Length: 555
Image 1 (cartoon, rainbow, N blue to C red):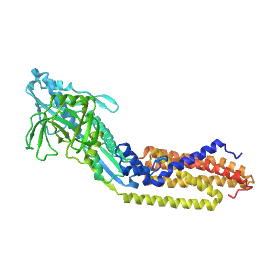
Image 2: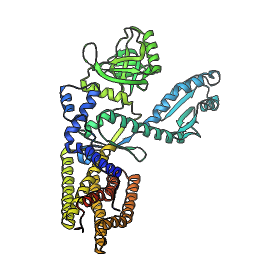
Image 3: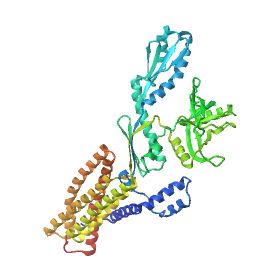
Image 4: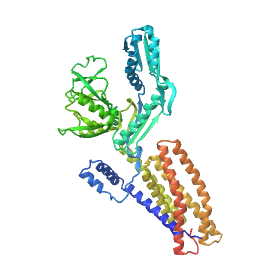
C-alpha cells in the first residue's frame, strides 16, 4: 500500500526544515561572518560599540554556522617553509657541555683539568683534558651520560650520544638514531606551534601539512598577505630571563665564559652582558596577555607555571636592586631593576611596543617558541579579487547546471518534475547545512563536487520516474505503479551511489587539500541525494496522490 506512517512524515519534514534553517546563514554570509567575529571579540573582552552593532545584525536565535571558504575562494596566503632541523643538533650539543664538564670534574685526579675546544661543526662538542694518557678512560666517563634514544613510539636500544677520541680531543655528537628522532620531534613541534599561532590569530580553516622530511605547507584563507603570515609564524619567539652582569657600548667586547652579550632593542648602541644560563624560560610561561603598564603604555602581562613562578620568586627575593634582563630571540627587550620580591610567578614586559605589537607578542608567547628557524621556499598571496572571481565562476556554473536541470525535469515530467525540482533544492540546502555544521572548507573542487551531485540527484529521480512509467504501461493503478516504481529503482540507485560513495571515501582518505574538498562535497551530496530521491520525493508523491486521487499519472 502507498502509505507512509505519520512519524516518518514528521521526521522527513523535520530534517528538511532543519536543513533549510542551517543553510540560510550562508545566504547572508558577510553579515553572519561579522556577527560571529563580533561575538568572539566580545567574549574575549575586546568588544566596542561597533562590535555590539555587528553582533546585533544577526538574530541570536538563528543558527550562525557558515561554510568556511578555502584559499582559492576567499583569498589568503600560501607558504612553503623548510625547517632548519640541524640547528637543534647544535642546541642539544651545547646543552651537553655542563654535564660533560661536571662528570669529568668528578674524576679530576684521573683526567686533570677540563676545557672546551672551539669546533667548526656546531653539532659537535670537543673537550680536551690535561692528562692525555687517560683520554680513553675520560671518554668512557662521558659515554656514561648517553641515554636511550626516545622516539615517538618510545625508547629504543640505541643511545643518544656518540663519543670518540680524535687525537687529544674527546668529540661528542648526537648518534644517527638520535638525529632521526630529533628531526621527527622538531617537525611535530613546529607543526603544533604553527597551528597554535595561526589559531590564536583567529583565522579560519588553515591548511598546515608536513611535506617531506623537513618542509611544512601553510595555507591560511582570509589573511592579508604572505608577509603578514610570515611575521606571525616565522618568529622564533624564544623568551628567556637572565641576570645582568654589565652594560657596555662595545659590541665586540668578549664576555667571560658562560656569559653572552645581547643588544638592547630599545637603546641603540647599548649591549647587555648576561649570565648565559637563564633563570626561567618562556617554556615555563602558562599565559601572556596584552595590557598596559603603570604609565599607560602598551605592555604584555605574563604568568609562569608553579616551577617557573617558584624560581622567579626566589631569584627576585635574593636580587632586589639588581637589573634583570628579558631576552626575546637574542635581543634585550627590557631590563628592569628588581624593586621587590615578586611572588606568584607573574610579571609584565614593557618596551617601546605598539598595541598591535603587544597583541602579536602575546600570541607568540602563548603559542611557544619554534624549536628551529625556518626558510620560506615559496610564498604567494592570493588576492580577494581572485577568490571572488572563483566564487562568481562557481556560482555561475552551479546556477547554469541548476536551471538546465530544473527546466529539463519540468519539461519531461510535468507536475512530477516540480516535485523532483523541490527535492533537488532541498538536496542543495542539506549539503550546505551539513558543510556548515561540520565546519568543512569549501574550495573550487568542492563546488565541482556539488555540481556533480546535482546531476547524480536528478539521475536517481529520473530512474524512479521511468520505472513508474513502465508500471503505468502495464495497466496497473497509480498507487501500485508508484509503489513498484520506487521498489524496483531502489537497488539500482543504491548500487550506483554506494560505489560512488566508496570512491569518495578513498579520495578523502588518500587525498589532501582540494582533493579532500571534492571528496567531502561528493560524499555528503550522495547521502543527501539518496535521502531526497527515496524519501522526500516519495512523501510528496504520496501527499499528491492522497489529495488528488488521480485515475492515471501524467508522468
